[in-house]
Image 1 (tube, one colour):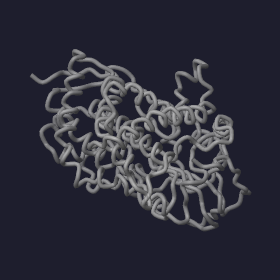
Image 2: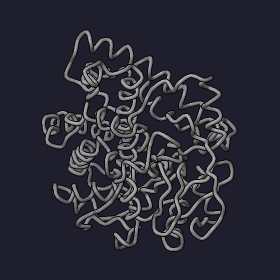
Image 3: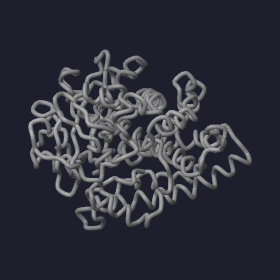
Length: 439
């Protein structure tokens, strides 16, 4: 994690550094606006009027907002000029101060690959790259299909009604990634809690109830969760060094970096990154896929029994419900992008969810369509930090919806879908559904 998360950006308003209006800036930094969908209206307006402008939301340091896909790709592909190790967390000044207070001068309990720059990032990424490569996932497809079938069985026990987000979507990808990591089933509730709490102390229901101070809690929760997960994975890696197995934690625990064992902070961070990224992101998109089936009558009949259409359905769900809405970079030097003067130290907020609805790339970008060929979304990022687990996520979703559509006749909403209020992700917290099993 960066030691300069809240470093101010020295800037003045000028044509080469255009600022977006305060109302738009505040909505981009508002958890509730992320949960209720107002964010997407703001981003659509910015794509039309100011696709690369400075935001100065109340309580946050300024940041550039990048909304068009061409600029998003240009920045994410440039590993030298845009860094992830500095100013790389989308959090308020109060939250970063709380994090600093919690750390008391110590380093962050884990070092996460997301916040590594080159050449360190590539070195660490290579440790597990083969495990997650598309060509190697066939060996575990049967295992994942079995898990998918088990969770469809679980859903069918609810007798025609359930909360898909809570009862299925949050649990299925958790089981998959925990099995691949070698985490025992009995520890899954712990991993679920840690995954959901990391950076997520801003649930809108709790804020309204006065039970959490919103963004301030994020800094505290990140430190506490990282420390707790560090203790867990330190013990687990010690076991895997003594008795290696065919799982991801064994790969990490026994990895060599420049001929030496991987340092403990990086090893703990690697384990926790796989656990959280492999769960929350896929859970959110899987829930989004169910929402699409509910909101598009006839879609379930169209894709049932057609593997290619199910693949297209999965890809469109990934586009519409981007697992990570924003990515953060820090400018390493002064530069110009599309006439904007970017200065060294400026924070760049990459709106991947906006790039996925860029009218220059997609027709009817707010409509769920499985006929997009090619579907050039940017949900998994691009360049050196492109999502390591993207092929696993696609496989999990494809197998799940193959199993699901073969066993239910129809599905519809039975209540209002709700998202968790979170600046980085907006996983669905509730999707009440009513379904009819196939006979």
